[in-house]
Amino acid sequence: MLSLKNSLKVLRKTNALLDGHFILSSGLHSQLYVQCAKVLSYPNLASKLCISLSKKIKKKYKKIDLILAPAIGGIVIGYEIGRLLKIETIFAERVKGKFKLRRGFNIKKNSKVLIIEDVITTGGSSLECSKLVQKSKAKLVGYACLIDRSEKKNLKIKNKSIISQVKIKIPVYKGNNIPEELSKIPVTYPGSRFIK
Image 1 (spheres, helix red, strand yellow):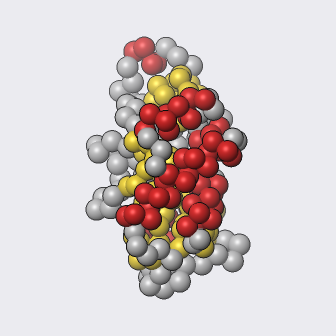
Image 2 (tube, one colour; image 1 turned 135 degrees about the horizontal axis):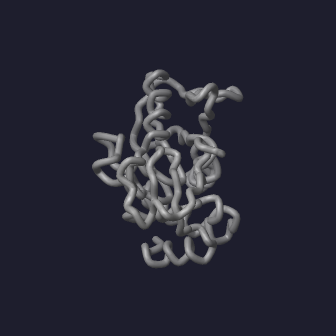
Image 3 (cartoon, rainbow, N blue to C red; image 1 turned 30 degrees about the vertical axis):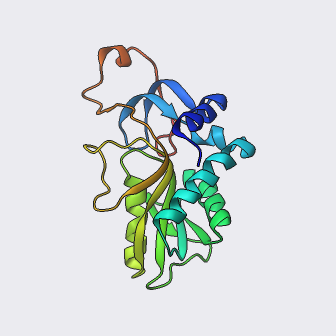
């Protein structure tokens, strides 16, 4: 498996770790942003992260029937992990602000589902996808992501562990509690939910 140090080297080499003032999809503010799309634009480097993550998933879960990824960030990672583990992979997409299954995708009753994202900060998107699993009367086995930047105080996912390739601590702030030095930097909206 790829070490944390080598995984971070891949993020830096592909300019996937950015400095600035970012408003994340969760609405929280951050001084650092992990743009997984940059890593994924280099498939040969991204594959190293995905192979390592797939080994961790295989070690933790003996049986997975389906991988579900929230669009758009989770699609490529979900696909690659599904390919490596030889598991059917589908994705949910937002329709009028809520995740739905479209394109003929469905979750079979009693199937064991793993939700995979690119980055987890609060786990909001994964949690929304878990409602699709519950609605289908399937079993959620857990969550996985390339980058876990969650902190216990902001994490909405409870009672399930998150398997990640990189666990990185990056402070996040609510809009009314931004450090002065961060407030002086122009805001960037890198996530898919707050496009300006």
